[in-house]
Image (cartoon, rainbow, N blue to C red):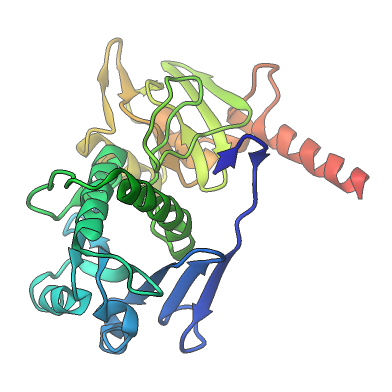
Length: 303
C-alpha cells in the first residue's frame, strides 16, 4: 500500500491460539477492528468453538481439485459457523479455511454480501485458482459511506491474507500499463530482466514471492530435456491456458505469472533446464545473480 508520502510499513499481529504455527491463528492489524481466523480443516472442531465463526462474516475455503489445481470457495453468513458446518459435510476439496470478521461484530448482511461478491470478482480476475462457487453474485447496493468502509476493510484483509498463505487474490499488473482501481492489485516493480534464447523472448522481474514473468512473454514450444517438476509445471500451464501456442514454434504467456524461482521460469519458457540466476539479464547485460551479489555487497559496505 502507498500514499502521497510513498510506501509505509504495516504492523500485523499473528496470535497462535494453541502455540503452534499449524494450529488456529488469529491475525489482525493495529488500529483496525477486523480480524482473520485461519485454521486447517483437521482443526475445524476447535475452530467452530471460536467467537469469530459465530458472527456475521465472510469466509474463504481453499484446497486443490483432483488435478492438483488450486480451488477456492468464497461465502458469507450471519452466523458463519452454520455455513462452515454444511461445507464440512458436503465439500471435499478444501483443506484450509479463513474467516474474516470484526472484533466488535459490526458487519451486517449487506456488508458481507458485498465483500463476498468483491472477493469473487478479484479471484476471477487473478485467475490463479478455480472457483468452486456455482454463481458469482452481483455487488449489492451499499451507501457511499458503507462502501468506503468495506473498501477499507477489504484493503486490510487483502494485506493480511498472504501472511497466512492465501495469495490467490493477488492480481499482477505491469507497472507500465494502464492504472486499475482493483484494490487487490500488487504491482511488480524493480529491475526488468530479459530471457533471450532460441525462440524465447521473455520479460521478468524478481519478486518476493518468486520470479514474475510478464504477460505476452514468448517461449519455445518444443520441449527439450527438463526436470520432472519443471515438465509438470509446463504441462499444467499449457493445460489451464496460461501458456498458449504462438507463431513460429513458440508459446506465449497469457497473463503475468509468478514462478517459484528464476530457474523454473527460465526452464519452462526455454523448454529445457536452465539456471535462471545466470540466464535472466537486465538491460546492461548483468545477470540476476550478479545484481543480487552486488546489492548484498553494497548492503555490507553500508553497515
